[in-house]
Amino acid sequence: MTQPEHRAAGAPAKVIYTAKIRTTGGRERGVSRSSDGALDVKLSIPGSGRIGTNPEQLLAAGWSACFESAMGIAARKRRINLPADLAIDAEVELNQADGGYFLSVRLNVSAPGVERDVARALVEEADETCPYSKATRGNIDVSINLV
Image 1: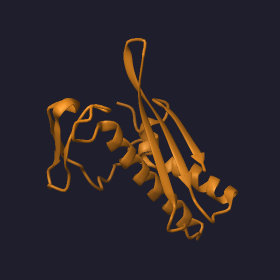
Image 2: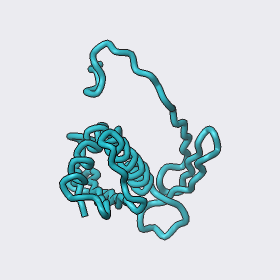
Image 3: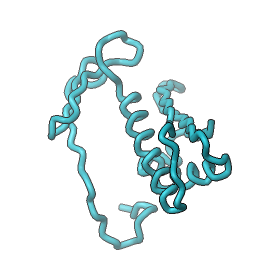
Image 4: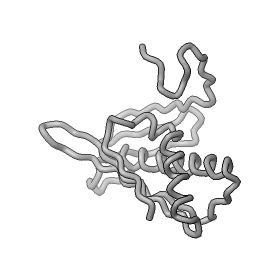
């Protein structure tokens, strides 16, 4: 097993949190519930019209929240206050080609009132530190746009 890129070889990892989710029924008519009861969602196929969310929406929500937090950490290091209306619009696409499925992602970052070069630096640092960005780097097409 290879060491993750963000950790020095042999350095022990400190687990900060473990999400425990049980899913039954898959994306068609499934349910996902967390062990602590905080998450309890019905699942459905995108565009099916059935009640429920889908894995792509859940990924978009998690990644955008994590990315915004990573931007906040980068801003605090620079002693910059981020605007209250900072927003990340995440678009996760489920694609099909050559008989298989794959994902692509766009993160559209809006940082009103932050100078563009400063916002760009915060976005770049967030992309380097956000666990979702790290986990998907090189695996899926991702574009991050400052809007």
